[in-house]
Length: 203
Length: 203
Image (tube, rainbow over all chains, first blue to last red; front, top):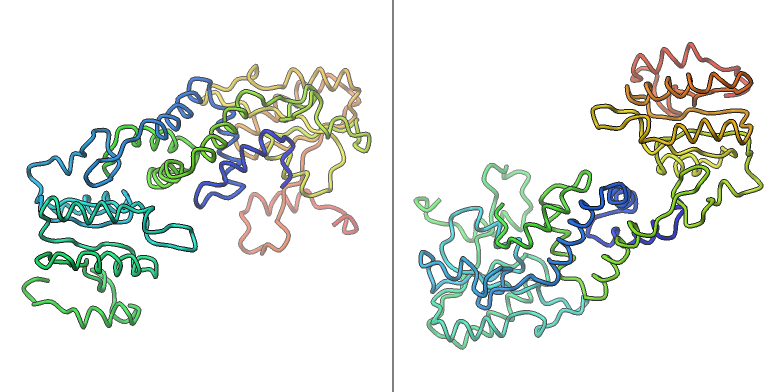
């Protein structure tokens, strides 16, 4: 697919850097933007520029927030002694959607991944340790992805948190999704769900 | 899915105006842009701004072009007496990919669609008529989409072109795609492919 204009081709290449966007979709988006009205286009570019320039992060949980402390951290209804450690804001939104969690969050901003050049100092792990000490946190729930990088990060955080003898360190339950068939569940998940079985009244 | 920041939410809404992009993908793209480096972000926004500001159209065929006359129109290898009328630049690229067409193009910029507020004067139909007269075009190939709007536009152009008695007006062949099964072809396509059958040696 040869694009007859360097300017268009350049825009397509840039749009195709977005995750999961191929050249064909990028061309479609570029032509859509090109054909949009000047005011629509200005609104589009303005919203992106503002996103990069004006976005702030909560000083406690490092979640994206328009206020210095986010609405979750500043809510008196939340359990201020419980912190759920997640990779990114998407996980905060997913857990909030369940309406089952009443504690606070701590957004790491990624997981330890030497191949991607993400080290311990690129994440908010030091801030988490400080927070646990300063805010007298009683429970830290690790909710990182079950990947090699997520596991490595879990182990590192767990070791750092061992300095607080009274702190409860937990992780979210892995098991068979509700409605799923045992027969088609992968053996690691099924195995863990048997080892970590729960009293029937909790299910 | 509640987004905890007005700025982020605004960016997501704007990105979701792109064709076929939902809120969830838009959020993914927004967070990708937010986490990208300042220089990558500047390149992204710069490419889009330049697209809108600097893109030019070929003065003959109205295709996107960095030069006043595009490389197809200015090529001595192309048949300068044959014009293929298409809706947009995507169709030019698709036909060019076949390497089977050696004539020129004429990009209408859309099809007549009163519901979308696209009238005759929003398209380059008048320019096409003038071109046929000025450049002594011998054949116009109509390659607009087979939709009601495309058909309407075809009929309107055909009527306008009737003023040139020597002009050959053709349309691209519709029929069963190569490799497709007769049994599963819709009856309109199959019917047309029988009515418009071609000599065996041409197939």
